[in-house]
Each structure stands twice: as structure tokens, then as C-alpha cells.
Length: 118
View 1 (cartoon, rainbow, N blue to C red):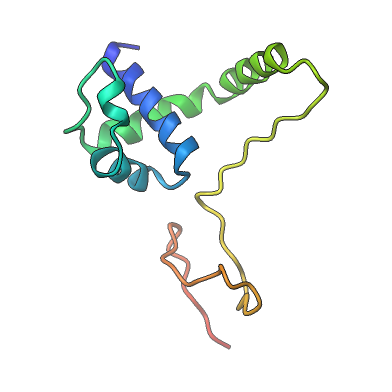
View 2 (view 1 turned 180 degrees about the vertical axis):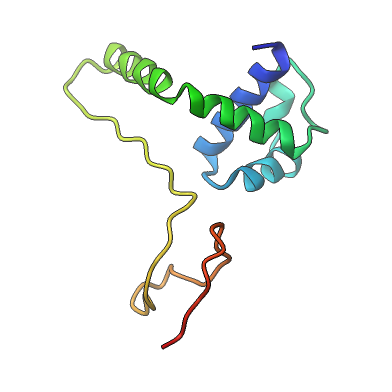
């Protein structure tokens, strides 16, 4: 990985940890809502969406090795027996009306699911 790719990887990882959201939302957050990019060795202030998507795809290719490394590091830092669960909430949705859940609201589906009313 070159310096720009490393900075992008750090930016997307920190962005998803601080403000979990889609890649597009993370890109907007990096551009307009945080000074995080100012702490990176490469200027990413004017980075387009495509490089961010590409680095996300690259990270996904190495998902198992990254998770294993994170687990090993966690075990070094916190030697008690614990479990670490990594779960991507950016694509979570409700099926049904969810009328009793005050936090549930209608939104656009990334999978282009249509809302069907019975």
C-alpha cells in the first residue's frame, strides 16, 4: 500500500468506528464534519468517493487477517477471557411496521427494496 492508500484505510476505519455509517456517509463526514483528515500524513480533504470505496474493497479482501490481528492485539492488551464481536450496522433494517420502536423510521434501501403495503 502506498501512503495515500494507508491514509485512506486509517480514515475509513476511524470514521466507521466514530460514526458508523455507509461509505458515502463516511466520505461526507470526512470531508465536512471532522478534522480527522488533518492528522493524517497525506492530504485527503479533496478526496473523491471512488478511492474511499476502493480502499474499503481492499480492506474487505483482508478481512480475516485484520480481524485476527485485532483479536490478537486485544488479547495482549486485555488478557482476560473476552469475546470481540465486529458487526456492520450500516445495512441493518426492520421488516414490518416496527410501530413500538420509536427509533425506527423509514429510509432509503441500499438494496433498492420496495416498500409493500398490505
